[in-house]
Image 1 (cartoon, rainbow, N blue to C red):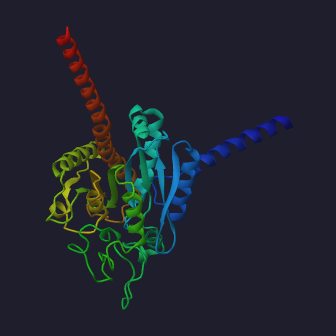
Image 2 (cartoon, rainbow, N blue to C red; image 1 turned 120 degrees about the horizontal axis):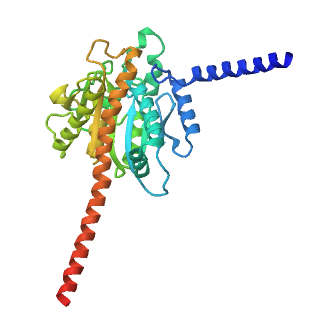
Length: 359
């Protein structure tokens, strides 16, 4: 009798424990403070040691370490790469939520999808969940700071305001259009191009590997847009037509998920002109496929997108991002295979013709 009671208690505790573990599973459809995102990164690495590593690549103004997740199969060889960053603007909380969701999805896909297995063998994904860590943490402080956009560096001498717009600080037609030199404004571009440590970190990490990167995807909100370079109306990307084609295909993929319409074009054409963006900088480095994603919504909630929209917003954006990434992969690797096959065929044909002539 007592043994049965004891066994029942053990079974009951086991069930309760399992339920507790289930409840404690990371929730991808709520907003997380920086400390929880950092913990999640460590857990993702722990659970996927053969695919995931954490790389530290810079410091914020407040001396926090900027880290990314490197995801891919270690082939022992130099590989092509995909860049994705989220949270360059502090108040755009849906962006870090998407980066986390994106990581989960590609890791899940790797387990069962031959195409993702192929892509992870050929490419590494470099994902920064929160680039502007200081600003993001500040936006969580209280209701009055929720809509903070910039980083947290102090303004120049004589200015009592804080923060530089990191997406106006990159060395890409810096300070020429769509910026402010008033340090209190939301689009203050900084004292100089690359004056901010967060922009410097991205510039160094990506710039020293620029020949490896096929895509540079920077995730923002809001507006439901896919923006391609350049932000300055007097400049046109050399592969503009291809970028439009790829962007429109991504918008179609997005629409198929939940029926949401994303507008595709350059910033001057569909939003407003600007300069000093990371997207423009990366295209100027020769990275072929560079896009800014502006996620949900169209202004109803703006930067304060409700948590019940995280799931659909991430699902549709994932389809769009995957469309771009797959295109870049297939053009690079399938195109290379086709070129090699054509070259081999030409060689064989030449040999055959030569042999026939000799006969």
